[in-house]
Image (cartoon, rainbow, N blue to C red; front, side, top):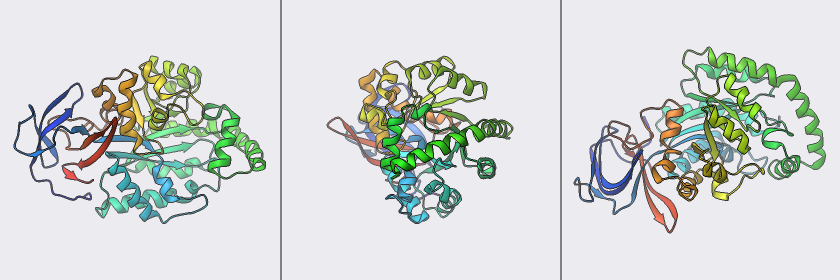
Amino acid sequence: MNFSYSDTSPFAIRNARIVTADSVFSGSLMADQGRITVLSTGADGLAGEDWQGDFLLPGLVEVHTDNLEKHLMPRPKVSWPVMPAIIAHDAQIAAAGITTVLDAISVGDIDPESVRMQTLNTCTQGLRDAADAGFLRVSHFLHMRLELAEPDLLHLFSPFLQDDRLKLVSLMDHTPGQRQWTDLAHYRVYVTGKRGWSEQKVDQMLGLLHERQQRHVLSNRQQVIRLCQQHSHPIPLASHDDTTAEHVHEGVAEGVSISEFPTSLLAAQTARQQGLAIVMGAPNRVRNGSHSGNVSASELARHDLLDILSSDYVPASLLQAAFMLEKDGYSLPKAIATVSRTPAQALGLHDRGEIAIGLRADFIRVRMLKDMPVVVGAWHAGRQVA
């Protein structure tokens, strides 16, 4: 059961600008019992609500968002109760047009005092409780972000292997000096600003983090991969912050199918050659650059090296960035696929992600404000949720 403002009775929409997997046309849609039952072309079409030329897009599919953490810790060192944070996060996700979300839950952290270390189990249980009580507007699944330098990683992660919500596991090593944080100057700016570390603490942590990397990363990586490969249902694996061709080849040898946030053009080119789905941050595209000084999403898109966008830390960026991909040479159907069909397929969610007869009635109504897309309505399995 999910939160709803309406039931799943048959309803129709007409005079919408519908974006499917391969075309854009003016037409009509009918939904019944949570599924799309009719699609037709023409401005008049079915008798139903007149959308007056607004876009009808598939509900967005988010593979990696840290947004829940922002609600759990709205200010540095301020912890917020878990359930109110979950409800607020869910509402924000729905308002952004996201109807399927993988909440990126960190298992381990480079900072032992992080909110991530304190809320792993309360967050995942809270998401379950909220869904069971019918308070969540959209579909929530789990993306477990494994910090490979975490000494207690296997103990923390193993229970989630039996969780039916687990749809993605990413292999992360945020040790400064490589991958995302090759540039230590950018790292210092980031942690002194976001985490409030003094320069003295940064120096102390650098030594600790490198020691943890040497001691735990290789062993944890090997054991996690073994656990995921031996699982009764294959769990997609993602590499994270690939910087070199060697990083990509390492992941491919381990069964990785997704390259999350490659930091260089070379890494993205290698990922494409190896058949990996390439994920880039929507905030990166909106801002026209990476906050950590790495390759821009726009540059990768211009080289046709961007398959999936993730809102990462700004839910509203997902739709905005998709429309901006048209400036990088993507057709509108191809651009919208980066936030709907392609991520759904990569996660094995074949019942959603596009506007097609027989699929779930997950869709959004979008109106343009000059050149900015604005979500003015969202439907999840035929129920209006925003």
